[in-house]
Each structure stands twice: as C-alpha cells, then as structure tokens.
Image (cartoon, rainbow, N blue to C red):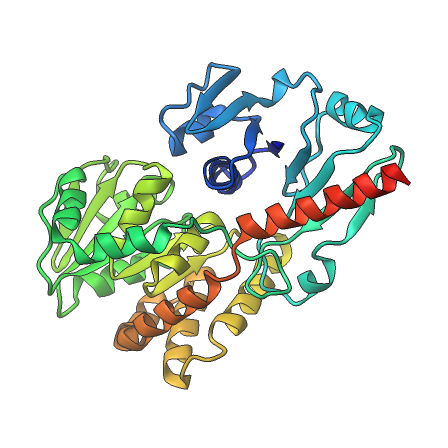
Length: 383
C-alpha cells in the first residue's frame, strides 16, 4: 500500500516533526510504502541529519522524501494532507481523474477540546472535484485518533532508565559527566518567554544544585542577556551560583527522547515535544504556540482540565500555577517552589498518564481508518 504525506512547514519544526515521526512509523512498523512531501527540507534535515536539503528526492530511514515542488501528480492509495495544507493542484486533479478515488485524510492539530470528538472522522466533500476528504484528529480520548507512539517506545525508555551505562553514554555524548543524584536536572525547549528570568533567578538561589539543558533556539538570546554575554554557544556551559546551564545543539528526534528521559523536569514547546514529554513520564511544563487573540490559552486550559482531572488538589494547583505563569509570561519564579514540592506526586501521576494514553495509538488508528474508507470506496465503485 502506497501512502503520500504532504507537509507545509509553518512553525520551524513542529509540523514537520509530527509528519516525519508518522511517516517513519507507517513505513517501518506497518510496512507501507511512504513518501513524505515537504516544502522545506532544511527544517527536516535538523530532525534527520541524513536528509540533504538540496536533493529533490531521496530515501531516508525507510521513507521516500521529496521536495513539494517536484510533485508530478502520481497518486498514492492513501493521501494524508497534514494540518489543513492545500495539496498541489496537479495532484488534486490526478486524484479526481481516477476511477476510484484514493483515501484522502486531513491529519489535524492536536487538541484536548471537546469539540474534536464530534469532528473526528467527518467527511468533507471538495467544492468542485469528485473527492472527499476525511478529518482525523489526534487527541487524548478514545473518541479521537490518539497519539503517536512507537511499538517499542516503553522498552527503550525502560532500558535507558535502568542501565547506568546508557545514561553515562548520553551524558558523554553532550560533553558532560553524569550528574550526581542530588542535582535537579531540567530540560528547556521553549519559545522566547519573559517569564524565563524569574525562573533562572530561583534556580540560581536554590538549596539544591540545578542543571538546565537548553535546546538551541531563540531562547538563547534571553539567556545571553541573563548571563551578561553577547551570545551563548552550543556545547558550552554557563554558571550562576547553584545554576548550571548547558547549551545543546539541535538534536534529531530519537536523541531528544533521551534528553527527556535523562531529566527530572521537562519544559517543552509545540505539539510533537508535548507528546514526547507525556510518554517520557516525567513532570513537564508545556509552552503552547502563541496565537492571536489569546486563542491558544483556551486550548491550554482544555488540556490542563483533562490532564489534571484525577490529580490531587495541591499538585493540580501547583502545576496549573506554573503552567499559567509560563504561558502568560508571568511570575514563573514565584510559582516554581510549589511545583518543586509537588514533584514526587507529579512524577507518579505522569507515569500513570503515559501508560493510559499509550493504549490509543494514532498510527494503528489511522491505518484502520484508511482501510475502512478504502473498503467503502471500493464498495461504492463496484455498485
């Protein structure tokens, strides 16, 4: 079975990160012949260093990767447009010309809002062509398409958490020795945020040493200002009292999982890293992508309501306080102590949540959904 996935890169790495993860899973776990069409191969090459941004067509990790502009209109059995991107016109016309239309799915953005339950799986006829697109929503309930997680994910996580040699190898790979057990390890992957300085000050004055692993990105501008330097460089370490900051180069997807596993608390941004943080089963803080008119805060509240539904009152308040301060650019430093006190409860809760959400696997659900639509098309064509 052939599957084409179309991706327009909007938010640097978030959209293409989801598409690349899905493409690899469909190809390598479910045996589909997958082609990923991307309009910005430079962004994909950050997630997969083997990708050559100057090649229009290449095969990487079991997936055919092609530049959007090289699309010649040869249609696959299943067509997945992601995040409401518009397919190339020649491809749409080729789809419409077929005696039996291919399965056409729009993989939408992840949301915890209740309205996605009523929209998941709905058909949307094309206004001028004999084609129907179906909406497929990732999500956190059985009424949605679920979340992307590999079949061996928890085995790999368990091996890392149990084998000191694997942990030591990770720390060596980023140029550090494995920290002592009393060091609080925090990963920071974020957009620029006015709440950052307050957090850094609290960590610097903490009673326990804090090591912060910072992923390369726009946040380095703020960090450089905090350390009173012109710029910070990947691979370098910066110290302020009890706080040590290590700047990491941008890493491929598989290595990012190791960062999340190695740390005690994870700050993440966007959609793909949010999902990985949940399956890492560690306390985490999500910075949602900011939108006009504060629409993103409604989405954030919906996730918080769902995530904390079975969490104790004190831990819930601590988590909500830090998340809201972080996403509103507020007093995150003031909210940190309560979060730190709740960390043991949040750790156990995070593990239970991860196990629960891993049951509803997006890759398998999408496969079954496309097969169902394909049978429906074949039946209609025969009739």
